[in-house]
Image 1 (cartoon, rainbow, N blue to C red):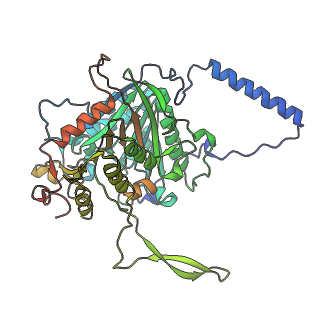
Image 2: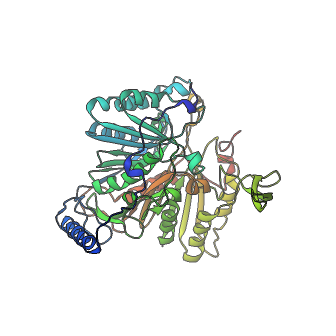
Image 3: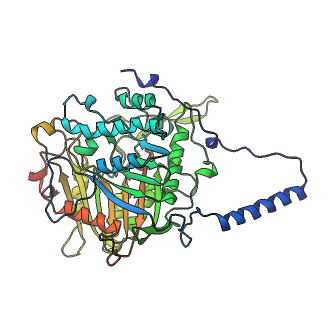
Length: 510
């Protein structure tokens, strides 16, 4: 396998990714004023006549009409089953197949890595067939006249590249984004955009295991150009950074900006029920004007909760996971001035930085507003040992006298002997939060690096009304997400953090 340095970039940086230059002219002030007035009149005329414009809070969302549909999507690992009373959601596999079949013009995919075939594990696992089918459908898209673009995190030297090479050979355009150089993180985002109209966002990687061996959750949105085109601006930022030597513009050009954020969400009908929706993004350096940072979105959902906050996430750590602290020693600059020189921190300094931002906000919600907090965390062989003392500390806030309500449970995906041999599988990979007001469906684990250095995104849907009586037959997306959490929380696969006999032998390396 060739090292990553040999992996080629195919296309030049698009013109719109270059910072605009100021115009210089020799016309007089009167001519300039006349031009400005003409532009203003044209702009106002466009606002009056354009049928496809989108507006934020208090505006007209008829551009997306009443056709916007949102569907909760899950991957349930083979061998898992829930009680008969639970309602199954569409599978990630079926949803991706549907999106591929619906594509007529374009498909853009933002991804962490690609292993859609079973070549990387050597296990001859038959459940890889679903991933291989998705890849084959993807390879056929360019023959149907569909323009395929893939933005992927820069592969490591050991990462398999077969899928990416096959995509290029089929006619797809592939760009690797060197976030380790740009931000010190990776491109961890996972979303699809189809024809600028449909989308998927969630926890599933472009990995066959994400379809049959890992528990995933996401959302598919159909016939909703307003939302799809706004998410497309995040993709275009990745695409612009996917050329050799690319730099993060400061500020981002205006065409990457958005009007939809935590303060002015897009108001529209989802499945016939009113909703206020926006996309957040991380890290801060990749957020253009108007884009709510992912950490800010997450914290605002917690802060707005008055009754409960339910969280399901693979890992929860009030530390960094991949970056380490540095201490400064005095060195000398070129002019002899003292400058701080970062050096690696030797033992006994801690291996990670303390980062209690989310942890503190949850504790504040419990203590100051008496909000009930429940945290469902993934348990598997790769769980970090440092996570469990923090989880026990959070759970210890619960007190019968003060009536603080906090509970922490660990979710364990069962595995047969054959399934246990599949690397990096059999885990609850969900990354969502639900309150009595909002649904937050993200792509990031909950530790410091994911919000400060790593590229991620989230869909935030505020819905304070119920879908009961609307004739849809299902609840709102917020109500559906709440039902998924309740199902998992009370299932045989979860164990209280205070019951180590049930989980200790399964969580972390043995």
